Image (cartoon, rainbow, N blue to C red; front, top):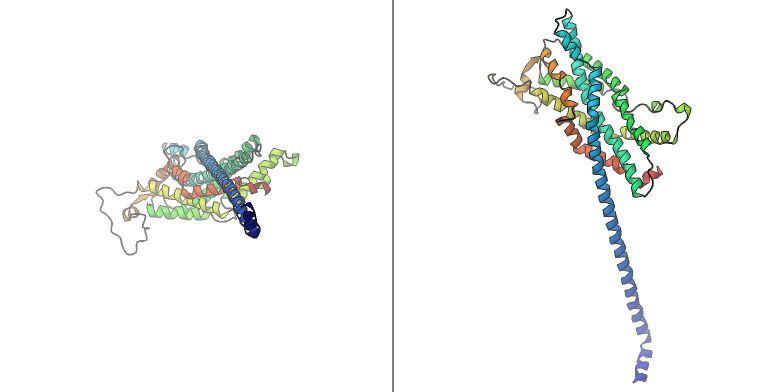
Length: 368
């Protein structure tokens, strides 16, 4: 029996060898596939955890951005008011001075200027802090994910973030000067007795915006960060390692400020700010209950967003001045400000923040 089995195996030796090779190969391939599947699952789990951690860090960073904006707003409001003081003029008017008309003219320019400057500076503050804190946040996440000691030490972070003082100081002074000139060119010749509708006020604001935002290659970002050569005035005395790192962060921030994405999100913020201002003013242009509702004529050019009744109601410019003068307390407010809330929750702002964070938390940034 054994000889017959042996003869059978000899006759079919090649088949047995082939079958064994196939079975062995299938077994090895199966084990290899199982290992690869486990590796893939582990890699996917690791990537998922890393992505979840990254998302959590990003969202936490945005909450920090919001709190930082709200904490700086009082300083910004105070800085604008200090440079555009209207209270002294209103007190002076109560004394019935002989140059009453001249004081009213000054009050007209200052009232419009400080409200418009408040909109610009608030938008700039929100966008600049969103950029800076996401640049820092991206680098800190990258350092942590690679298990490295921080590449952006605390003193560098503080020095970098302190650059916001330019917007609260020299940058704001320059911005206010430009705004005042534009306001004077637009409203300087308008009589205090001139009746203006809300539509006319909107037109005046558009003219002022066009002049403020026209001109240089960096018409608005120059108010937000000091020029590169003025970043550290003591460069001639030698730069420390921290200075070099701070300059690098500031230059990277300037690159973001020069991008079309920045221009787009700042424009969205400004449009929302001036729209919110007009919404606030509209409350004072509503017709009295007994007034007849005006009918529209074929030549009316009021925008569809503005009711005909609001575009028809007019107020003397002298009555509009105190209304617009007080708007800074609504625009530049850290509490119950719909405008600031709009800026912080704006979807385009969120996408812009995510783009900045993504750029600076990616490993390839180490090689740039």
